[in-house]
Length: 205
Image (cartoon, rainbow, N blue to C red):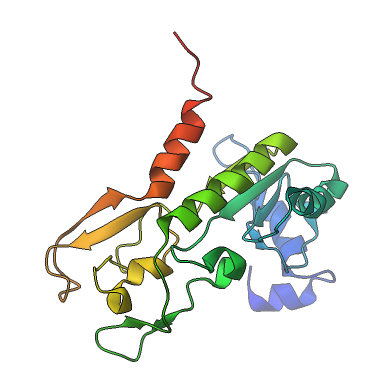
């Protein structure tokens, strides 16, 4: 939709664009979807699923339930399009801003402050909130993220950019000082924690 069309739409660009998104494509229906930040104001009446990027941290389980229950007022399935944590002590409290601890003006880029790497922090947050999502019967919950190649792990804490990533695996480059070098990934504690969690739901043969 052109900008001029959006200006003519009395209730905003999204309300005008959604019907176009629902138009059949080769006979198939294309339900429009949106992953919204928690602070976004969205008219969820336009969409089939209430889909939120959820990075909140609460000390008590009941607070998660209270916050997520509010999204059910539209009478539609609720999904968390993103959830996760970075990989250092204190990351869960920073939620979706946990990545903002890298000084990109330095070469090589470096972690600001004296952060302490903690894969356990990441794994615990992910499995704790996943338990909440499942107890509430949410439609879907998508972990963010699997891998972040531009935030490789290094043994020196100051240059361990993986601490500032949400990935459940760590990136290891053949030559840490060369961002173009080949790389591979290795699982973090969160990877194994998720595997155990989902493994409990696999039917026994």
